[in-house]
Each structure stands twice: as C-alpha cells, then as structure tokens.
Image (cartoon, rainbow, N blue to C red; front, side):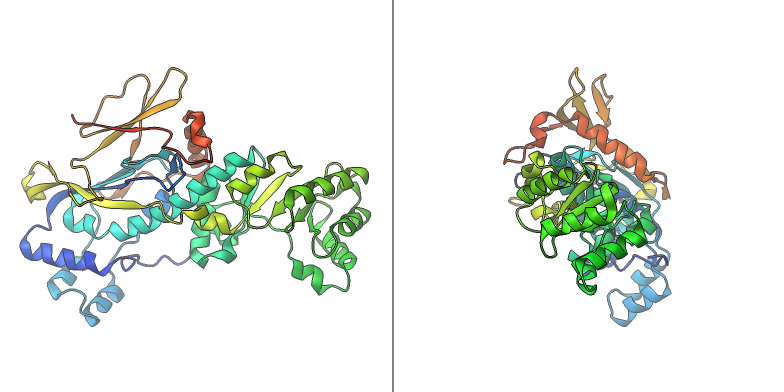
Length: 436
C-alpha cells in the first residue's frame, strides 16, 4: 500500500477490446459523457451514502499503462499493437464531477459524471464501479448503524472477515459515516483513521489464570484499558477486574450471550463495586438491527465486524456506469454532445448529461432530488450536489476525512425522519427528472 503501483489492470478485458474496436472505427476520440448511478437502493434502505471518491481519485492518478502492463497485454494478446501504442501514452485529460463524499444519494442520482473522449472514459468503468460499489455499500450500512447507536461510539473491527485490502477501504468508509475508530492499523497509516484495540480470548487462555491475564494487561496498558470478561464466568471476571484495577477500570467488553441482559447484569455489578464510571462495550455479530434493540441496554459502545464489512446484507451498492451523451465526430471538431440511452428491459438509462440539486423545505429538510439535463440555477432552498473532482486531467477535488465526515453529518441532518426507519419502505427523498 505504501508503494504506488499502476491501477491500469484493475479492469475488465472487454474495456480494452472496446477501445481497440473504437480506434479501428475512428470513434475513440469522440467526446462522451458517462455517469454512475443506482437504479434502485438495496431492499429496505431509504438512502445511500457516497464513499470511495477520494480512493477513486488516487486510483485514476495511478492509472498508467507502464512497460510492465504493456508487456502483459502483448504477451497475452489482449489488444493489438496499435492499441498498445495508444495505451502507452494514455492519460486522463477530461473532467469529472461528483457528489461530495459523505453526501447522501437516491435512485437515479448522478453521483459521478465523467466527460472526456470515449477512449479515456471507457477504460475507467470497472475501476470506478469497483471502488464506489464497495465503499458506498459499506458507508450506507455504517450510517444506519451510527444512527441506531444514538450517539454511542462504534468501533470498526471487521478486518478478519473480508479481503485484507477491502478491510482498509471499509474502515475508511465506516469512519466517513461516523464510526469513531477502527481496529485496522493500515487504515490508520494510509488514511489517518483513529485506531484502537483491546484483547482476545486467546490472551486470557495463554495465561495460567484469568486473574494473571488481567493483571498483566493492567500492568502493561494501565487502568484505562478494556478487559474482556466473558472467557469463563462473567460475574467472576468482573469482580476480579475491579479488584485488580479499582473503580478506575476503563471498560469491560462482552462478546457473547444475550448482550442486553448480560450488559444489564454487568452494569449493576460494576455499580455495586464502585466502578460506576467503567464503560461497557459489546461485540459479537452486531448489525443495525441488533444495535437498535440494545438502545435501552446500559451499553457505552459497540464493536462491529462482519455486518459492517459485508454492507449488512447489501455488499454492493448496485451502481452502474453508463454512457448518456456523445458527439458524432472527434472531440477536436468541437461537435455538440447529443443524448444517448439504452432501452434494455429492466435496465434502462436516461440520456443526456445530468446536473442535480437537492430541494429543501423552509426548515432545511430534503423533499426532492431534482435531476436536470442542463445546468440549473439553484433556488434559495436548493443545494447543488455536483462538485468538480478532476478538471482537464488535474485532480481538484481531494478533501481531508474530517471535512467528509462533517458533510455526512450535514446531509443526515437534512433527511426527513422516515429516512431512519429500519423497516421496509420507499426512498426517503423522491428523485424527479426534469427535462430542460
């Protein structure tokens, strides 16, 4: 991860065969517009969260067909020599707009708009979708979990349940959506996500007794550490923990059983022992539904793993990358773009380059996602959604994670109350297409 490598082969074979055929037909240099959008949200979701934009910008910056990549394409006869010569000089020189990372989106929202020659845009399809589909799915699930937690902190701890690099991206996406920390050190190194960790059952089992394990951890890490208390008998473990650490014990973690009932018993026991400030953290196959059910339990924080890194049942955001406009002649001719759209059954697209605004009511609550086919003039209650990310091939849209987190908080504050229901229902904000 520290050594930046070419991302050019993070793609599908067919993108390069399309490029070769377009070069052959003389259409590769036609100006084209591609858009990323979701036709629908996953079942039961009322909104989606944009995430992965920062990672995608880095990946586009590293999208180069260097000598090693060109040699691979030649050895495996992926494309012909003329196409390889074109790829050797490939640079993205077009424009990209997108919804701000951390913002919300709805069906039909044009969350990414790519305008360039067909030759430059077509090869970015798989890269864009693989980044955005993963990260949007994780952030959308994480946002629901954060809302269900009601202000209690969440720890992302799913690294052991997914691909090693997907885990890093998931930690970043979860942090954008409001998670407090991650257990993944690579995410801390690569993106500056705060990290934290406790101990596993193996640490307790390594020692001659639970008392010995707790004493060792306290001596090494101090009284503010978190002790895992469900390896054997929870009550005995809690009593031992307080006896060794005193009332200054930072936290205990419960990883099994009926978490709500066990947490209530542990809270009463801690309070009776004078450790009324000791926090209770629960882990163990949590998702937004189980977190919501624990709302009345005396829980101070949650650790979430498998459900988070798998999108809590929706591991992809089902985003697509479709051409919506193109010129009839090479870009150098300055030809006007005209709308194009597919009419496939169940998979239609809307032609024309899109612009989007979120229409708000007098209280600042979102009431509609307005998608236009020409750049609109936002009214006093409209918020323009697309921002420049790449201009003439230069990246202009990179942002620190702190700003992205703040954007997500503002976007969530705009949503109506129905957005936060965990039951099945329609998107919280309708998408209205306006031909202009």
